[in-house]
Image 1: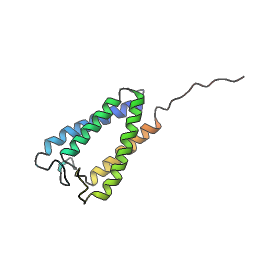
Image 2 (image 1 turned 135 degrees about the vertical axis):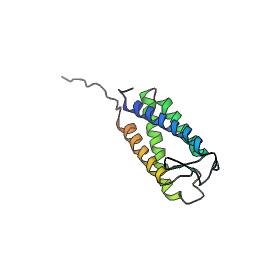
Image 3 (image 1 turned 120 degrees about the vertical axis):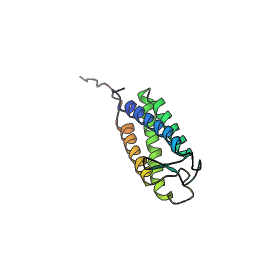
Image 4 (image 1 turned 180 degrees about the vertical axis):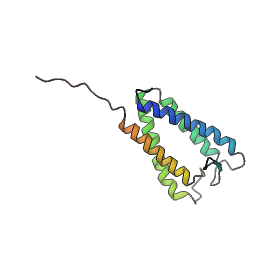
Length: 135
C-alpha cells in the first residue's frame, strides 16, 4: 500500500469518510433526513442524506484502493465531484437546493478533499515505460 500514493490516499480518505458517515448518524436524530438544517458534527452540518453520501463515498474509495488503477480512477472521480460540490456549495448555502445541509466548513472540507484527491489521482502513480537504447 505504501508503494502507491493513490492506494494509500484512497484507503485513508475511504476510512475517514466511512467514520464520518457513521458518526453523523449519532447526531442527526432530531433533524429532517433531507433539508437545509442539519446537526453539528465537529462544526460541520450533517443530515441523514449527507451521512449516506459520506458512507457511499467512503466505501467507494476504500473498495477502489485495492488496486492502483482503480484507486487512481476513483480518487480522480471523487476529487472532481468534490470540486463541483465545493464550488456549487458556495452558491446554494441559503437556498432550498441545499438538501445536504451544507455550511461554510463543509465547502472548505470538500474543496480541500478535492485538491488532495485530484493532485494524487492525476499526479501520482504515473505509468512509466522502460527506455530502450538505440544504437
